[in-house]
Image (cartoon, rainbow, N blue to C red; front, side, top):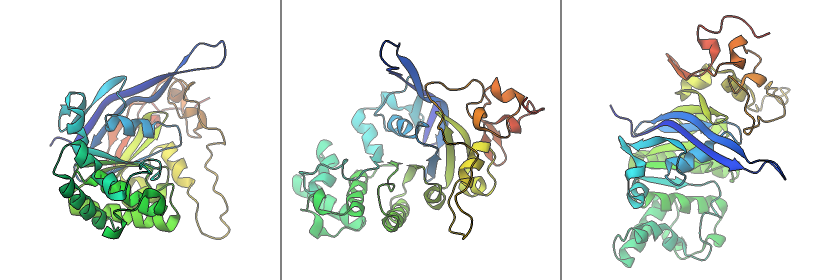
Length: 324
């Protein structure tokens, strides 16, 4: 059975300034990534800041072209699709609900804008559909003529969700959609997204650094590190028995309300990896307490296992002896 969306060998590189009188350097934000998104799933993508999550989101939306590799939507390369045709099927919900909404437009006109761009219906019909969608996301019709500045952060994010869904897309790319909200409001938005998924038969790609949020909403999880997926599995399996040392470290970093536990020590150190100067071999090996000799010279492939897929020499025959 064909996946709804797939990425094959996806790479996105950027040339960046290294400093005065220094040559420009290449940053591989996404580096040879393969991804499958099945219809009806909620695929959570997690990883530290700078691992390439948002760049991947922009490529899945068709906003950033890949340097190499390709993305298919039901088997068709999205580069062959008309921009509007792709937008009908794949829509975003971004992190900051205020900066993604035009502060000078009314809420109803913001939600109706995709319908206007696609030339669907009369002005009255578009407004009616916008108000209907606002009510479906929990905003009564009385908010239709408000502006974003008159709403709370959670209400603005409901507007952004309504705008994304008014075209009835198949896939919604959620890039940190709750990270700018209070914890109590986060729960409301997450539950709303789950309700809308059931109502409209949606497929989500949910990008977040918050593991508790991902565990709550996702059916599948992919873990990114320096532009690559290092592990993917069903959510319950990944949280119960993580395979990759980086996934294990991420899960160990989650704060717990248990008294006396204090701040967890992940063993990852305080410094983030430098994407402009990635190490040879496995990109995680300088921070890995379980590394073996092969880790410093050979990059492991993402290999399928009963629990999912993992890119780690510990799960391959080559991992026969410890590192020096």
